[in-house]
Image (cartoon, rainbow, N blue to C red):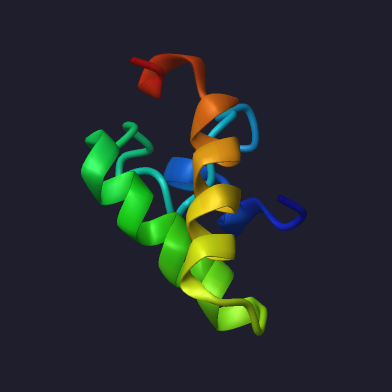
Length: 68
C-alpha cells in the first residue's frame, strides 16, 4: 500500500488494504476478502485459476485474523 486511499478506512495505520476492509476500515469476512484478493490478482496478472488460488491462499495465510 502506497497512497493513503490504499489503506482500509483511509487510515495509514490500518494494516489491511481497502480491498480487504469495509468503508470504515474493518476487516471483511474471509469469503469476501478471498473474492476481493482473487479479483485484484486476476486484474493485475495473466495467470490461470490455480495460480490465483495459490497466491490468494498465501496472502490470506499472512493475515492472522483470517487464518483457520
